[in-house]
Length: 436
Ligand code: LLP
Image (tube, rainbow, N blue to C red; front, side):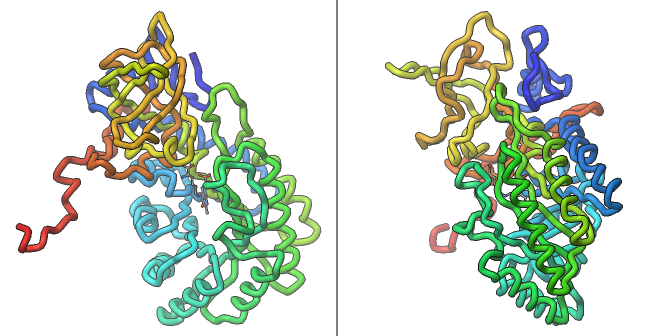
C-alpha cells in the first residue's frame, strides 16, 4: 500500500517500512517518541524543484535558486544534506544563519528574512556576505545602512513587499494580506518610497524584490496573483530607473496531508510562476528567480513514532494514549492541522479511535475519530508528514525532553538528534544562593 506524497514508505507483509526499514524495529531500537526522517524523500522533493524549474534557466539564462526555509526543520543533518544537494538557505535569525554557515551553504545562496532583525544579526549577515537581506520596514533599512557604514561595507538588500493577496490557507499561516505584519505595502506607495530611499543610501545595494504570502497553499492561483503583483512592481521600479536582479517569491507550496486529496505539485507551481514571469519579458529584463520552500521539501519525509501505553473508553470516545505529545509536534494543537495516522502493524480489524498524547492539555490530541488498525497497548503508531514544523516547533512543556531523531537512507539508519534528558531540562536554570 502507498500513501500520497510519501514515496519512500510502504506497507508490506503487514508491516510499515520507511526507506526499507521496519518502523516497529526502529522504535524498538531507538525508543519512542521518535522522529524518523527519510533522506531519500528529501532528495526526491528537492529534485522535483530542480527538474520543474530548470526551464527557467534554459529560457532566460538566469539563475534559479532554492533557498530552503530553515524554520521548517533546522536539524544539522537535514541542513547539511540539503546543502550537499546544492540547496541555499532562507534564514530568519542569527541561529539559523549560524546553522547555514556550519552547513557550508555558499553565502550567495543565503537570504535573510524576518520582520525584526537585530543589529547583531545584521552584522552577522553583512560579515557573511549573504545574497540579500529581505528588508521588512523603513526602520530596518536605516539600521542596515547604518550598520554597513560602521563596518565599511555595502549590504545587498531586497524588499519584502506586501501584495495583499489572499493565499486561501489557515489564517495563522497567511502572511501577505494588508492586515498581516509582514512586508511593505505596495498599493499605498510605501514600498516604492522605501526603495527610493535606499537608492540614495551609500551602504546598501538594492538587488531584489521579495514576497511570501503564506504557507500550505493548495491552490495555485494565489501564486499567480503574487507573481503578477511582484512583476508589476518591478516594472514600476524600472520606470523609476531601478533595475531588479532577483525576484524571490517565498515558499508556501502545500503538501497532501490528507491522503485522498491531490494537490498541486512542484511542476504545477513552476508552470504557473514561469509562465507569469515570462509575460513580462518585453517590459523588463528577466531576473534571477529565488524560492524559499520549507514544508514541501521536508514535511513528507518525516514520521513521528509513538508507542501506545494506555487505552481508555469513555461513553463517546475510545482514547488511545501514546508517548508522543503536543510538545513534540504541536501542529494539531496549534492549527487544528490534520496529520494522517496509522498503526505500524496491520490488524484484521479496524477501529474508530482518537489518538492523544500525555500532556495536561485538552488540545493534546493528534487525531479524532480515526479509523485505524485496531490499536492495542504496546503498538507503535506513526504520525505522517511531520518533517516540517515538527521538531523545529517542539518544546519542553510539561518538563518533557524533546525526542530523538533518526535519518533513514540507502546508506543505513543514523541517529541525528539525541533525546533530551532530565538534566537537559534544567541545564539553563540557575538557583540563587538563598534557595540552595
Ligand atoms: N519564506 C518565508 C518568508 C516564510 O515566512 C516561510 C514560512 C517560508 C518561506 C516557508 O514556507 P513553506 O514553504 O514552509 O510554506 N508553523 C506553520 C508554518 C509557518 C510558516 C512560516 N513561514 C505550520 O506548522 O504550518
